[in-house]
Amino acid sequence: MGVIPFFYCVPLCGIALLFIDIPEIGPGFFPAMSWLLPVNLIAIILHFRAIHISPLSLTIPFLSFTPVFVIFTGNFVLGESLAPLGIVGVLLVVVGGYVINLDATRHGFLGPIKAIWREPGSVMMLAVAALYSLCSVGGKLLILNSSPLFAAMFLYALYGICLTAVLVGVGKARLSTIVRRPLLGMGAGIIIFLEVICHNLAISLVAAAYMVTIKRMAGIFSVIYGKLLFDEKGLRYRLLGTSVMTAGAAVIALYG
Image (cartoon, rainbow, N blue to C red; front, side, top):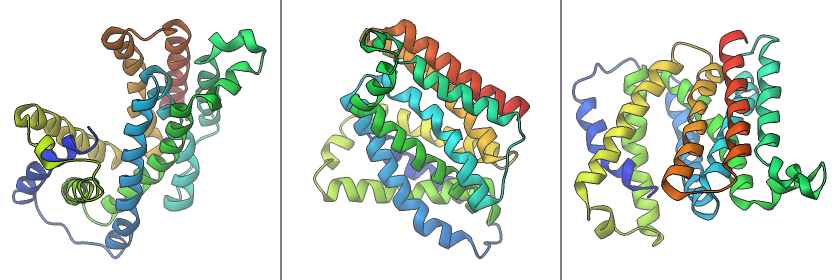
């Protein structure tokens, strides 16, 4: 599941590269690419592992913590900083992470905090959020040293090839499985293709932390999907927590 969308995105990115203008490549492009690719690979593998072992509504919402990490990585790598009100948004994101686990209050006030660390998928997704914060600022470095569209197409064409080679090479994926249902695969590839275009165009316009906060509002939809598609339980607190985290993201984006 991790490799299929990116595998089918590769030809789309390759075709797009034939029709977009090739920008002047800055000196920071390939150094950024050298660490961005492996970090991306590790992040996506852990991402899919997390949602495999734990409920969607207890894993995906923790991606809302990515902007918290981007505040630091964006400042360190890109020199970006948030306005003071951005701190309010950060606090809301943290509170949302607490509210998600309020159904654990029968174990005491600290029960929800302890529940986060007992749920392996949640812990893993927190690590993924930190890795994605590096991916976001690394991607913006590529843009600053080329252009939004070229950076997106070049990175994900190479990324799709590397991810497929790694997972097939270690026996975690098979080409026969990847190409078994090409129409569905192409549908997933188109979604990823459109997502990376929108991502790069958006992050080229604003500070990385602001853009990523809006992107992480997808967490609220994941909670809903978890209920509708998989009948996951404990929706009330998880949906409330995700909403608070999303509110934090909105505060950072709108008032930070």
